[in-house]
Length: 169
Image (cartoon, rainbow, N blue to C red; front, side, top):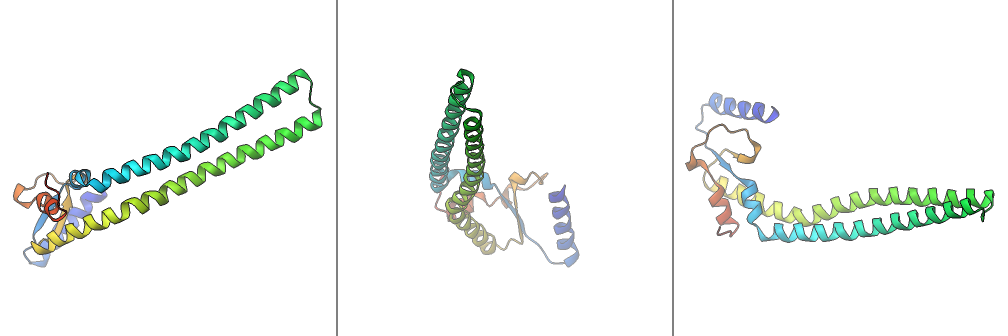
């Protein structure tokens, strides 16, 4: 809805201004899927996430083992009530550490994603801007936004942006 309103406003402005406006469109998903650096970034991010998840799983397993052992001691009567409460409090602390670690993982993943993809998106945006300026386009729409109902194929800048990025597919 928001995108449709934006498109309507842009078209109204272009008509009202009396200037001939040139519009184009591009399939960003298609282009980004062909950039080798995106595939490498996807792989690096997945490996980083796997590493972080493994550590978290190890922490959960250790907590479960401690909880099981504590419960066994309680059932066998080999632990005093005071020691039980102390160890139970330690388990709660460990559980809180795991929750904090989960938050840290989300932050680290967001930072890593930004680190890996920012240069790629900057390069893509530069290529898109260059193609638009070189060809005199006032507005370029993304076909993935699902706003366009019709567009003449001659307005498709996808091939030009791919060429600007050195993509031959």
